[in-house]
Structures are given as structure tokens and as C-alpha cells.
Amino acid sequence: MRVTVQSSGASRSRRSSYHGVSLSEALRVWLRVAALSFGGPAGQIAVMHRILVEEKRWISEERFLHALNYCMLLPGPEAQQLATYIGWLMHRTFGGLMAGGLFILPGIVAIMGLSWIYALYGNVGFVAALFFGLKAAVLAIVLEAVLRIGKRALKNSVMIGLAAAAFVAIFFLSVPFPIIILAAALIGFVGARAGLPSFIAASNGASRQDASVDLLGDELPVHARPNNWRSLRVAALWLALWLVPVLALLLTHGMGNVFSQIALFFSKMAMVTFGGAYAVLAYVAQQAVETYGWLKPGEMLDGLGMAETTPGPLIMVLQFVGFMAAFRDPGTLHPLVAGTLGGLLTTWVTFTPCFLWIFLGAPYIELLRGKSTLSGALSAITAAVVGVILNLAIWFGIHTIFREVHAFTWGPIALDAPVWESVNIWALLLAVAAIIAMFRFKLGMLPTLAATSAAGIALYAAGAIS
Image (cartoon, rainbow, N blue to C red; front, side, top):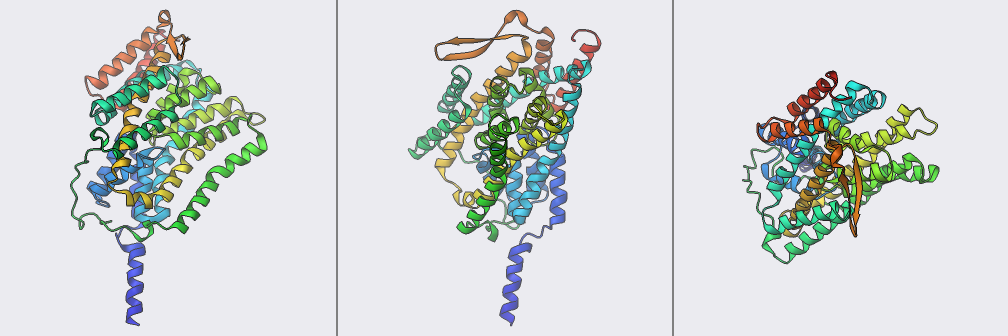
């Protein structure tokens, strides 16, 4: 009898009490993380590190960085997936759903509200002036992202060459973003496997904390150990949640329906969004503006401005794209109802795969610590992403500062070239001011956004812009 009692207690301890963090406490912590998730992935990851590693000491520095490194290998927003990963480690599937779901919930509500305002009043003078100012700051933010990621990723001439090649491929040759990322991953994998020093990622240098300090410890939780039968069940469930709505729309409405197009297009994006929102936005903008006609060029910047000023992943800008697509092609629905459904559908097919990647892959990812080939692939992808983000900055800059562009083609080269006589002097001045504020005076993202938005409204009030 004594043996039975001890075994039951040990099992119960392994199931629920190995770290002592209750679900109610975890809920409060993840609500706090969600409320503070401004500033893009770098700021969001820093918030999680400060709260989870330094303050709460749930997990060690080593475990946190290991989870982050491999979340960066996955498609989707790494900060949201990192929250899901740690929530899953701490409290199983429910913990992952709680952490990952709360991380995006404030952004869903905020972007939906702003999309309604934009759709109803976007052409009203002061609202247009507000977004006119936002665009200038967004340009500075994207440029800052190029430099920030570049400093981290371009450590040698090979990585610089990969970034340059990615920029040329997407900017001049219109090579699709997914092909660029897959090619970079293959190059990095092969280079690391061959033992080439340029592709072998440097050690992160994190010192291992005392196992008694972090609550999770170094042991792999029972629920985090790979199990093939469990993996099949997880894959079946989350693939159904993701793809059944897509297939249902395709079968009932056909390929020409806007909701079918939204479901299919953003499902594809969910599989190739390596490197975060900035890396994929140029491709999304190109498709949404030129292929589907969902948005006008400047409206993508408006959406990015919304995402920059609300909590949650920057990839939430896709909800705005889906909203506007359905709002402008509502069929028999009221435009606002159609827009709301289009935005929520976009969010569903964008983030449901993120939970799939974590719940299915995390147990196996935990077994891949220290694999140099995967680190090489990650390094090459990150280098290529620098070139893609530079393309995004230039694309946004052209469509913000110039009122007119024209398609330029010469052999395999195809790009949007600005009409120099159409320069918008106020847009140029605001963009320069935002760049100086962020780079010279180190003004933060939110103060810069607020200042340029106020400047846009002031210019409208003075009659300088209409």
C-alpha cells in the first residue's frame, strides 16, 4: 500500500506540481505579457525575458534562448510562438493555448476596431492626415529593423552576400519570397553540414543558471517527451482546425469568392512567414495590391501603422488586409459584416498553424539542441531576411514619398520606379524627421509614431495637405 501511495504522489507531482506555478498565476502573468507586447518582436521578446526569466524565474536563460532560436526556424511570428512554447512547457496544451491566445487577443480587438474606423472614416480629412503622419514613422521603423537585424545577422562576408542576393532577387527580379527563404535555408544547411565556418552559428554565450533557481529546471517534463501516437493525434486535430474551414469555403463558394481567396492566400502565407512580419509584408503587399486588388499601395502602410501602435505581433496587419478585402467585395453581406468576417478568417488561418507547429514540433525540437546544421540554416535565413526587409523599406518609401510610380522592365528586371516630379515634399520631410528622431536622438517607436501623427493632423489643419 505504501508503494502505491508513493507512486501516485510522484506521478501527481510530475503531472502538476513540478514547478509550483498555478494556472491562475500563469493567467495573470500572460495577461501582463499581452498588455505589454508593443514594439515589435524584439521588444516583445525582451518583455517576456524580463518577466519570465529575470523576474518570475520560470525557466532558465539557456532554455529561453533555446526555445527562441528554434521558434525563429518556424514560419510565423516568433514572439507569439515563443509564448506558446513556454506556456506549453509550463502547463501542457492548455498553457500553450492560454499564453499564445492571450498574446494575440488585444491585437485582434484593436486592429478590428481600427479597421472599422478606417473603413468608415478613412477618407475623412483628419483621419487621412493621421495615417499620412503614421506612414513617415513606419518608414523609419522599417529602416531601423534593417539595421537591427543586420547587425545581428551579417557577421561575415558570406552572410552579407546572402543578404545582397536576397535583395536583388526580390527587388529587381521579383523572385517570390518563399523561394528566397527556402534557397537560403538550403544554402545554410549545406554550408553548415560541410563544416564551413561562415555557416556555423556562434554560441549564444548564455551562462547556465543554477537549476535550483528556475522553477522548470533542466528536466524535460513528461508531457514534453516525443510520442508518435500523440503527434499523430495533434497533427490530425490542428490540421482539421486549420484546413477544414478553407476546404469548406473552396467547395461551397469556389476560387473566385473573396473569402476563399483570403483563406487560401493567408494559409499559404502561414507556411512561409519566416523572419517575422517585416520579411513577408513586401510579398503580401505586392499580392494584395497588384494581384488581388484588395488594397491601394499606401493602405498597406496604414495597416502597418495600426499594427505598430497596438499590442501583439506585427503580423496582425494581415487582419487589416483581410478586412479591407472582404469589405470591398462583400457579396450579399453588409460591408462591415463581410469585413469583420474577412479579418477574423485571416487571423484564424494565420495563427492556427502557429499552434500546430509548437504542439506538434516542440517535443522533437527539444531533442535537437546544439544541431549545427539547423543553426546554419537559421543563420542563412536571417541574413536573407535582411535583404527582404530592405526591399520592403524601399517599396514603402517609393509609394509614400512619391504620388506616382510607373512599372519599369528591362529583360528579367521588373520594378516600380518613382516619377520624380511627383515627390510629396511633406511626406519626404516627415520621413526624414522620423529617421532623425529615431536614429540620431534615439526617440522610441511610440513617441515617434505619436509625433508624426500629430504632425500630419497639424499639416491638414494648416491646409498644407488635403
